[in-house]
Amino acid sequence: MKTITKYFVLICFLIASLSGCAEKPQEKIYRVGVLVSVNELISIFDGFKEKMTELGYIEGENIVYELYIAPNPVGNEQIIQKYVDEKVDLIFSFATEAAIEAKAVAEGTGVPVVFTCTFIEGTGLVNSVSSPGGDITGVRYPTTESATGRLEYLHEIAPNAKRIFVPYLNGYPTTSPQIEVLRTLASDLNLNLIEGPFATPQEVKAYLDERAASSDIGMDAILMMAEPFSVIPEVFNEVYKFADEHNLPVSSFMVFKEAYGPIIGFHPTNTNMGSMAAIQADKVLKGIPAGTLPVFTSDNDLNINYKLIQKMGLNVSEGLLARAYEIVR
Image 1 (cartoon, rainbow, N blue to C red):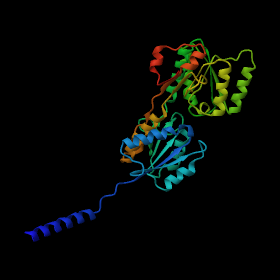
Image 2 (cartoon, one colour; image 1 turned 180 degrees about the vertical axis):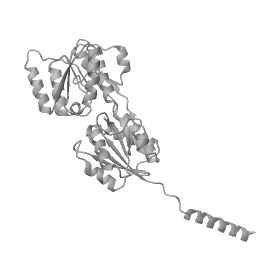
Image 3 (cartoon, helix red, strand yellow; image 1 turned 45 degrees about the vertical axis):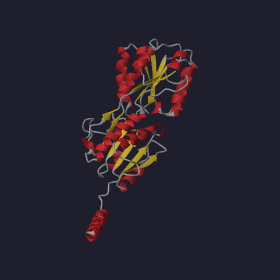
Image 4 (cartoon, rainbow, N blue to C red; image 1 turned 90 degrees about the vertical axis):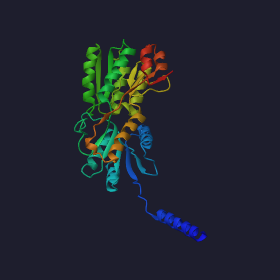
């Protein structure tokens, strides 16, 4: 009996050993090249990674991110080519210029591109929202929606402001569709849109200096559209300084924590844009061709600088405050 038990234990040991030696299928480790062309938007990547983790992609276990934060918005083809040469599973890029360059370099290579916080109007980035085509998809920035929302909220809080100054980078692809919808809305609201197409930040400063020296500055409020000048410090610092000196309400993409700058910020939350892009990336990594996935559009969030509104002697309704994503008090 003891002999039978001994052999039984030995057989069990051998079976367990052989089972342990059996080769387990190795889980694929995905490699994602990440191109960030605007450092101020880095929190988009935080939202992307957080959502990817929720979807089962654990950094260091089954996914690796190769992050590159570009010193300039354009001229990053070399790092994209590196991602392509290394055959990453996906390129995740933002904002607009990075997405355009990623598409140009990766097109036809089999490396899919997912973008976010990106203008698609006038850029030729996708064939359409419903069918982007090629090997690219992502999350559209709500360009025209942000323009009209910024004007509507500005008018609601500062109804006596009739002359609205709109500075922007002349010739930038997304300015035309925004200006078109703003013209229509301004006409409906009986507002005078003062368009300021400029080629350089220096031109913006020169114009504001000229206005400051005049007996009539020629504007009652300022609206910053979704285009480069709204995020270039050399421009928006001059605009906000001018507005502060002349007690002008500003509507733009963000608000500050102090009583300075825009009274209204209307812009998608960065982490939400990253999270939406992760949902697209997950589908692509699971084998769905990127070009067949409809482009998402991120929602704008309303931010109100109540502290600044009070300082300027303006009023904001409780209904509007209730709609706000963030209120600076």
